[in-house]
Image (cartoon, rainbow over the protein chains, first blue to last red):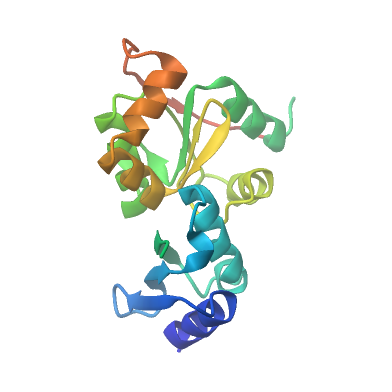
Length: 75
Length: 120
């Protein structure tokens, strides 16, 4: 299940994070991830999103994730 | 003829606000592209839009240039500001308008232009 893969990848990249992974359409390829982590503290939004994108590089590249919405928060 | 990558770089570097999107402003083909376009228009941006759908290489080259994996992508004065989520968030906080005022002046003209990239 793609949401589990996404959650695992985000947990590995942001061990301290509180995470939410929502399958927006129920189809298993449109996701909204919300990540709150101390790693985002002081970083511009674009760099916060870059960190999330790079954690999910593989499912983004292989088409597992067709659409991704990202919400990030510092602590 | 310039390569596709040169054309992409040219749009990014020369257009004050470049939006790489799925579809065109007249016929938006994706909800996220629509969100980014609306935020830009609401903030009074002159938008130069490039449709990535006609050729899959546009998207591939763009992501290699920007290091950003998804569409849409918004650039202001050559700098990637982000995708739909960031553009919306910056618009909601008023920062997008401030950024545009800073980059282009507050009395800018609002225009919407569509660029079609044609590689050989």
